Every structure is written in structure tokens, then in C-alpha cells.
Image (tube, rainbow, N blue to C red):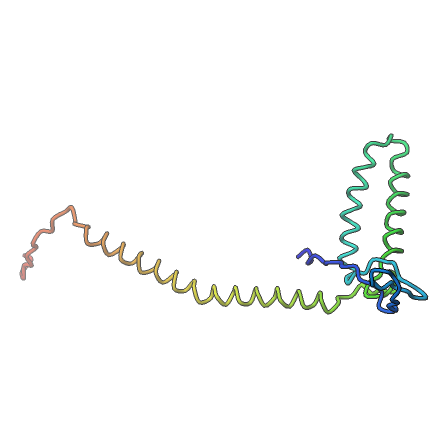
Length: 166
């Protein structure tokens, strides 16, 4: 199972103070240290996204001359991954601080998929014996019809038993 897509929704920082001050009555976020990184919930999903983007970077390298392609691709790939890792926070933590283990949301998704599989199998356990029974009944009836249409080609003779074979 590949993994469920993760929705990234930017939101204002949690530690931001709301300061009224504009003419239109809107408030401006003011904080001593604002975090402008993109907030994500799954490091695993982000890693899969980086691998997907890495394939596109490799395709871009096809336009480069052969002698500089490998070093240039390696440099571009490293730069891209570093930039993503520096500009992303996973559950409020930096890339290096975030763990690779399953998060609660990942476990919830897996549990839901597992429950769906259990329900599907239980449904099949109820349906398939009925379907199999119908097929077996049809097969037995067809065999009986075939046997009713069978007539022996050779007519039996009435044999008489002689008590004295001499």
C-alpha cells in the first residue's frame, strides 16, 4: 500500500499574537519569532513526495551534456532535498528532529483500511457459500437430466438359468 495522501494546509503560527491596527479592521500577525516553514504531518509522505520530484529532476537532466550530467544531477538533487528539508516542519519539529515512525494519523488510516478488508472478507464468507451452493445444485440437476436422456444402445437379452448344465 502506497500511503494515503497528506493534505498540507498552511495556517498562522500558533504563538502569533493578534494585533489590531489596519484601517479595514483586519489584524496583523505579530510575533517575536515567526515560523514560515510549511507545516506537514508525515515525514514518510514527504519523503515519498521527494522521491517523486527526484524523478522529474532526473528527466530535466536529460537535456544536459553527458560529461556534466551526473555531477550536475547529484548537485541539483542534493540542493532540492536540502531546501525542502530546511523549509518544512513536521508537527512543529524540524526535519532532523522529526521521527520516521508512524504517526497517529498514519495508524488510523491503516486501521481503517484493515477494517474495510475484514468487512469485505466477512461479506464474501456469507455470499460465496450461497453462490457455490447454487452452482452445485445446477450441476447436479444437469447430471440428472443427462442421465434421464441416456438409453442403452444394446438391448439386454433375457437369460434363462438352466438348473442342470449337462
